[in-house]
Every structure is written in C-alpha cells, then in structure tokens.
Length: 268
Image (cartoon, rainbow, N blue to C red; front, side, top):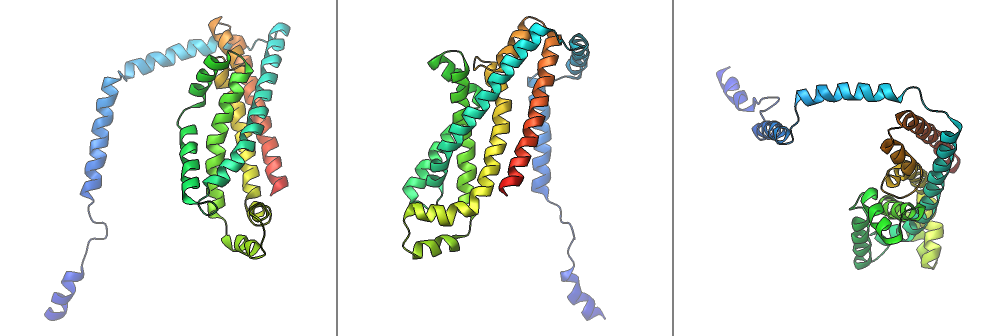
C-alpha cells in the first residue's frame, strides 16, 4: 500500500493552478485605472452633477417641436443625409471590390496584396469625422465633403472584410475553373464571386446602415445632412427641436435596418 501511495503522490496536481502573472496583470490594470481616473478628474461628485444637468436638459427637450417650419428643415436635412449615405455607399462599395480582390493573398502576388492591405490600413486609420474635416477644408462645406469622407470610410471597412472573405473561401472551385483555361476575370466570375457574393451583399447593406448614422456625424463638422441641422439646433438652444431630430434619426435607422434585413434574405 505504501508503494502504491508513493507512486501516486507525484501525479497529484492542482485542478486550477494559481496564475500569478495574470493576477499581477489584473492588479496592475486596476491600479492604473485608478491612477488614470485621478489624472482625468473622474470623480463621483462630477458624475452626480452630470446626472442633475442631464435631467434638466431632458426636461427642456419635451415635448418635441412639430411646428411646420421645423418639420420642413427636418425633412430637407434628413433627405440630404439619406442621399449622402446612398451615394457614399454606392461609390465606396464599387471601389472596395477591386481593392479587396487585390488585398486577397490567395489570388494576387505578395507585393500586390501587401500594398493593397497597406492602403486599406491607411484608409482605416482615421475616423470619418476627421476625414470629413479634411474634405471640408478641401472642397468646402456641404454634402460633397460628407460623401467623400464616407467613401473613404466605406473603402477602409468593406475592402478589409471582402479580402478576408475571399481568403476564407474554398480554393477547390477556383482551381477547377483555372484548370479549364479560364482567364483571371473568368475565375472571378465562376470561382470567386459565387462563393462570396452573399457575404459581400451583407457587408454592403450593413455599410449603408452605418453610413446613414455616420452622415449625421460628418454633418456636425460641415459635411451636410441632418447633422448640420442638429448642430444648428444645439447652438440655438432649440432642445425641443433637437429631440424631434433625434427621434427622426432613430426612425430612419430602424427603417433602414428592416430594409437591410430584407435585402440580406433576398440575396442569401
């Protein structure tokens, strides 16, 4: 019995060994969080005061302003935002298709795929609001600056997702088409697009929904659309009209989500 016990003793291990490195990392993260909060003046008193200020702000927003002149401004700005979203999505997706194909490492040579991925990384480096500020300086205030900014944002997002989708597809169908002597475009039409087109449509519909939201943000810096109307209402302290605009934006986003879901079901 003693021999058996002695041989079994070394086999006993703790089910959950202590991970001291992970524990020290969590402790360090908590300490740094407290330190950073103290530097940024994040205090409970400011949070409580913010709640009181927010309550007064929301009280001034109700009821929403439904005057005829305000609704006219709302409809004009919202229509412009929808147009900005549609145009930026169309041209952005159109440009993302070849860029995403060039970035796919299983279809193109290494120098081309890495160059395309470098360009995609540059396009994704800046928020659409920052890009909109640059285009406002270049082409002036208005919808054109917003469209160009959202085209850049769309290319950075859709190109990366499309390249990843192409790299994840099965190469058996592609090799079978290549064996027939098909050209590169024939390989794309018969071997690549049938496998990834449903996902590409899903990416495009999601980006349309995203661009509709972002059109409000670029409008705050002069990119046109409902964002400009919202910013003007804030400056004039028309908080009841601000609520009207916010409710309209929520309604449009929900409607666009239904349309996008319907499109995804059609093309799947």
